[in-house]
Image (cartoon, rainbow, N blue to C red; front, side, top):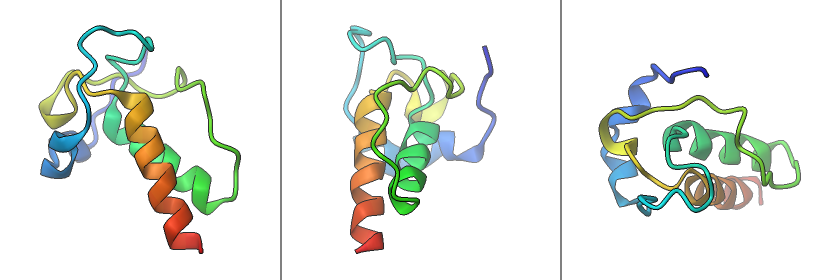
Length: 85
């Protein structure tokens, strides 16, 4: 398991992401910052949205702690679509 060491783990913007305390989607420990960036990049590259985020690093640090990585990915993807329009 890879652990995220990027500074985005502490960005205040990620505090507003939905919490995933129940781990229903299996993504509670996946870095929400990496998920957001992956969604943004996928949209900018015109890729179909992912449903599997298991290749992304884990993080239990800062503002991304216990955030819903799938929702973060979706928010990033939506932003990427807006930017590419």
